[in-house]
Image 1: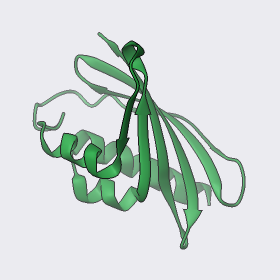
Image 2: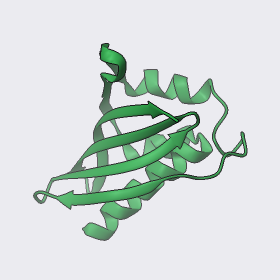
Image 3: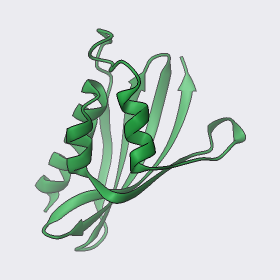
Length: 120
């Protein structure tokens, strides 16, 4: 199952870099939630709100940004749960993303994302 996890996590990074909403929909569970408290205010999004953000901005690839992403760790905690920590960029922001994944209906899907960013 580790290979499946790595594939999903890499697909997430590919979707981020290319702004690929269709690919995001393949790796996120439809009930996924996304959260951040960078700057002290809670941001809480459902998947559709996040997809609107992605659709409304140029992708890093379209902006000709250098690709700056990294899988820091992937830990499968059980047969149905896993966690991934990633680094990526949407300049001038550098992000740390923590993804919680579940194995359901025969596939790994992201069910929650918590992120932090720093300005570089």
